[in-house]
Structures are given as structure tokens and as C-alpha cells.
Length: 390
Image 1: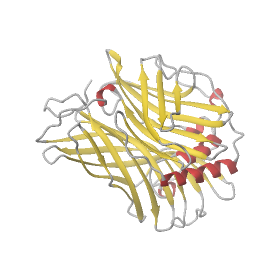
Image 2 (image 1 turned 60 degrees about the vertical axis):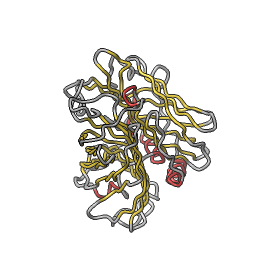
Image 3 (image 1 turned 90 degrees about the vertical axis):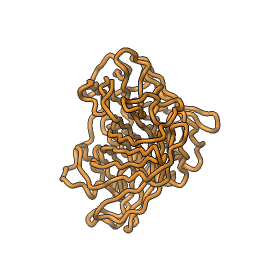
């Protein structure tokens, strides 16, 4: 259910800036795409494009063009964001949140969301008492997609996906989020929201990149089963930023790349041993922007299949229904990758017919290096269910 934040629709220069702000696939992943895609021209600003309209929170017409962001500033912020991999947060429960933060920014302590059908808000709270809020009633909204129950790949619920962002001019900061929300047919407030956000202080070259899952069904403790197993299938997605090393002939070393990824999530819980593990496969990339050291910029909007997989190593299930693991491994048959990271999640408070939690949701993040000195970070969220419930 994760939405892929189409940076190109804001302007390519924002997309390049947000190369500071990704999490995702693997060491310079675009170089290992299986199918060719020619670079596209930068997309026009939203005022020149058709934006989907719907009678829920993700409707809006206000737009801005911030094409004055320079190559130099984008490069500096991207570099600072890669440095953020040195300061990852530990998973935060209530909702499930993980983030990368530049060393001079205050750590994220949690997020809060609200949804009533006509309005969605996302508030990001920090250790120093500051917070940032995105609000579909007041901020720019674009690239809206309405999903019917039959189109929802995880449940039989209505859903909406969209993007909300705000550009402040003084100080020059950008906050943006790709968000998906699904809800019960009879009650908007019975919802699950998930996605990721990016917060960038452009002049100070600070970046914060995070992913979240939040909703009433995942906010309370549960009584975890003590026997049996359950398999959860669903979706995962997020954003990444990487810097090419020497792994890929024909791509200049030092090239920056940012993009978005989507994949299939499959998790297995063994309640008798109190362990859960999983895998994210069928990973595809799109809305990929590359920025070479000489200033050459390319943009690849189409979905491209890859051979990357993410392994979510076995994690202990706590008695409260939460779990947290440190074993996140990124693999590719042709690239030697070293990665480290964490994943975390929690079980639904509602059970299926077998008496097991009917759904699981959480976040994952990791940093990686390759034998050819490519580096990167990725962050995203996952959501799976044992059955397609309403």
C-alpha cells in the first residue's frame, strides 16, 4: 500500500534535491535494471498537469515551482543525507517509525496522524520539542490516486494514495510525504496510513528521512498467540539515495542517484518460538534521477524490474505484539553488498478466523556499501495480511 512519491511531478530539481532523502534498493540500483529505459525530460510543474480529484483528503490544486534549486545545492544536500546514515534512529512504537537524521538535527521521537475522510495530517515530533506537520487542508497535494476494494492488493478496503508537500522560503526548507491511507467502509476513522517523509533544510544542508505506519488497528498491545504459525503477504515500498562507486562500467564514479522502490512483502510468524522473519522481493524501481559529477542529469520515470531482494532476519516477538530486528540484508546476484539496518513492526489488534492477528505492518531501513565503494541508504514501510479482509 506504500505510495511512491513522484518527485518528477514537482520538478526534476526537487527530485534531485530529494536524492538527499531516500531509502531504498541497492548500491547504485539503476545500473542493474533489467530493462532499458531512456531518460525522460523533466516533468512540467503540477500547474501544467492533470491532477486526480477525489472526495477525500488528497485533493488540491495549489502548486509551486522551485526550479531555482541549483545542482550545487542538490549535491551538497545529497551528500549530507548519505552522512545521515551514521545516525539512524531506533524503531519507535505507538505507531511504527524509523528514520535517518543528519548529525546536527534532533532525533525523531514519533509521528501522529489523523484522518476523517476529508483531511489527513502527519505530524513529525522531535527530541528538542520541535515538530513539523503536513496537512492536506493547508499544504500542496498532487498525484492523487483512488483505489477501489478490488484493486487493493492487501485488503478489500477503499484506499487513497497521494503526495503532500510544503516549501518554506525562510528558512528554505522542504517537507514532503508520500502517503497511502485505507479505511473501513463504514468508518473513516478506522484507518491505516503508511508511507514516508522527507524534511530538508536546504541552506543548512540537513536532511531527515523516515517511514511510518500508523492507525487504530496497530496502536494497542495484543495477546500474542503461543502456538501455530501465520503467513502475511502484502506490499513494501520506500525511497533510496546512493552514490556510484566503480561497480558499474560506463557510469562515472561519484554519480548520485535517487529513486523509489516497490516490492512484494512476505512474512512468516512462528508464535510457538516467538519469532518472525520475512523477505521483500520482486523489487522494482521508478522515478529514478541520476546526477553525474559534471552536472549531467537524467530521469527514468518508468518501473524497472531488478534482481534485488531484501531479507528481514528473524526477530523476537514481544508479548505486547511488537517486534524489532537488526538483521536486514540486501542481496543481488551480481553485486557484492554489505548492509546493516533494522526492521520493526507490530501485529493487528484484530484476529482472523484461525485466531491469529490478521495483519502485520512496520518499517525497515538500512545503509549499504559495495565492493566497488558504492554507498547508499534506504527506508520504507511494509504491510501484509493473512486474508483480504474488509
